[in-house]
Amino acid sequence: MKAYAACMSAAALPSIETHDLRKVYRGRAVVDGLSLRVEPAEVFGFLGPNGAGKSTTVKMLLGLVLPSGGEMRVLGGSPADPAVRAQLGFLPEQFRFQTWMTGEEFLHFHGRLAGMRADELRARVPQVLETVGLGGRGGESLGGYSKGMLQRCGLAGAILARPRLVFLDEPTSALDPIGRVEVREIIEGLRAEGVAVFLNSHLLSEVEQVCDRVAFVKEGRVLQQGSMQELMGGVIPVGIRVDALRPGLLEALARLGEVRHTDTQTPGRADIELWLARTDALPAVADAIHASGARLYALTPRRPDLEQMFLELIEAGPGTAAHRPVPEAAHA
Ligand SMILES: Nc1ncnc2c1ncn2[C@@H]1O[C@H](COP(=O)(O)OP(=O)(O)OP(=O)(O)O)[C@@H](O)[C@H]1O
Image 1 (cartoon, rainbow, N blue to C red):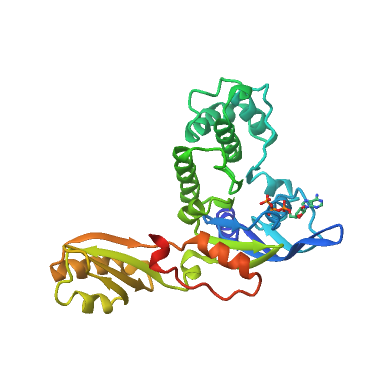
Image 2: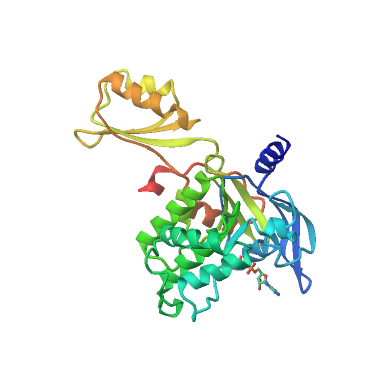
């Protein structure tokens, strides 16, 4: 019972917590007072321009670089603790692969370094190869892998030892669109298993689709962080397409949220932009549409346009006010 309680409280701790974290290189703060919190089973996007201090932050969180100041807790402890490190997975952006090894040998090697037993690895290696889309290719030499296959293999290495927290640095940079969707599914699978994922990526549309929360950093400082909904200023714009504005429909929708815009210019259809405070109002929106007798063609909650937000924030710099919801045109 005691062990169970300890296990539950460990699971409830934030996966990452930093307070005023700093790293100074040659008198210059490249990470400058960074405060972050990442919860278990959360996919956290860490976004910023080149040189913002993202990799340095990840290296500190992995215990590879010593902070110059501030506090950090990773899985409730210090990344210098081998017991904490054993529960971390890492896919670096520029991985140096042992090209003379086969994919399977590489994974066995890394598994042993992570403290896994040989018999455990015999079962686990084919599983992770399958997960990353390299099923049946593990016997081939890494020297003959394509860039995308190497990246998949690195990802297999990052999740091999069933980590509780995974750092993925540009995990899809070498992948084609199908590979990117697959990696997104792997990340969603990790979240479903309770694993926290810390994602560095320049591919903002991708981050947008998979992350629960994001932080924007510049010059080692967080400009803004929050859930997708918080970044939208607390509202969820929903695009609705129906065949026509039936009597009473707009009034019914106005009871559920704020009707921001209607467009009936195209014969045979009407578009409505509705702002909701919560996604759990969506079924009631569908019910209201059906009750009015209108035919529903689309009901689309919008995600924030991270690319636009990123550009605005990075150009404006520190001290930027909370972001407005993205206007409809930005989604066209
Ligand atoms: N070992 C080091 N010695 C001196 N300066 C360093 C060192 N490592 C990083 N820096 C500097 O710290 C700053 C932040 O670098 P970092 O690699 O953390 O940025 P990044 O946000 O990951 O950038 P990118 O998106 O280009 O990978 C850069 O100006 C870099 O030159």
